[in-house]
Length: 483
Ligand code: UDP
Image 1 (tube, rainbow, N blue to C red):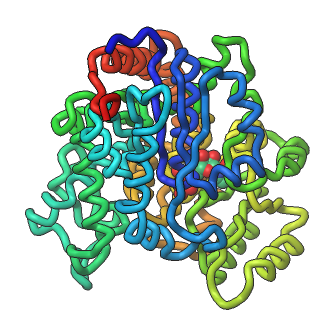
Image 2: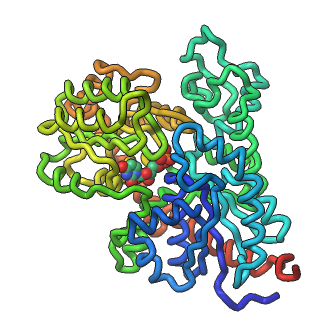
Image 3: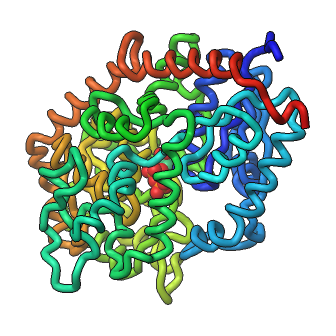
């Protein structure tokens, strides 16, 4: 069938904040290229976006941009904390979501010409292949994370995993091509610490990662300048890779070219942003504040939070701390902890439940970021030129923090330690002594921002992706049209 309309692309993230963030920005980039878009979100997250953001009015400007919803299978009042992710994965993702996706694709009009599926939702590859729709996987984790996940079976095969009880965690892992000189045992994705390599989460991560390479192509949120050596390794498994990131910066560039404000004050977060912290930052001297935030999933024991807080208080820096709802685990309620902190930190710090992170990182008062090393947070910090102190929690964060400290040399890695003395020292190193991090972070920010400017590598790769989707859509007959 000849298609004389613009390609219709379905973008489908797994229901997690970090994944939604980058995938909705990719959807907007494709809408700017003139494509028709359907963004498929979980019911719950769609409702939260409606409640806390202006996304509905924001996207109304793109004719043909539609939001559709799908259940994540858990009851709406489920707290979605603790082990909820595996619960959702095991109970519903492969069954209910797959079936719903298939039905939706069969009934949608105009038909979908290309799916951009979250690399963690490998079942969408099966559905796409069955229906004859081209599919591109978007892996929202870092290339370092993706490649380490992919290599787990080889690491096991070489006898470098599992980690034994008395293991030296600084031992180098030699079987991940491209990372032989800096990847230590402790930098492997968190799941690798399991004593049993048959652990369900390891099996799942390996399965989904290897499955991503069966898609027609792979999109990664990075630049060739940041991750060139790792991208070359990934290309040996999946020849068509588009490195189009950092997506937040790419979107800002393209919006500016359209004479629109960066993001146009669009927020895509699942909690209400507390803008009051910007007014507080406005009153602080340049580069005097360390921003402390651990993303959307991490939780922390009361004990650790108190240790962290003492480290901050004892350092010479001011701080802006995010304590998300459900962040603190343990017997004592989160509210007690937050109230106690708020009371004692009034003159040295400011605490919010959720911050407008990109605006915070780009604020002149912010001179450092104490982060859990989630990939979006890492990229946002790189783009803003803010040095990091990394305190990774899980998944790719362990390897991201190693790249920050050893490959890009734009911060310190605090993994596996959280005592007040270390926090104090690292905060002073980054904020007061500023060592070499401030300079290297500024330089990396410049290189990274150039890659999303006209003629830069990520800019060109996005143009190539847009063109390839157009060609793909023209060529592909759709079985679903006949059914
Ligand atoms: N974020 C935010 N406000 C906050 C904390 C986080 O807007 O107070 C955003 C942040 O900008 C990032 C995302 O939430 O885009 C977190 O994604 P990341 O990959 O860093 O971590 P995850 O939440 O997936 O662990």
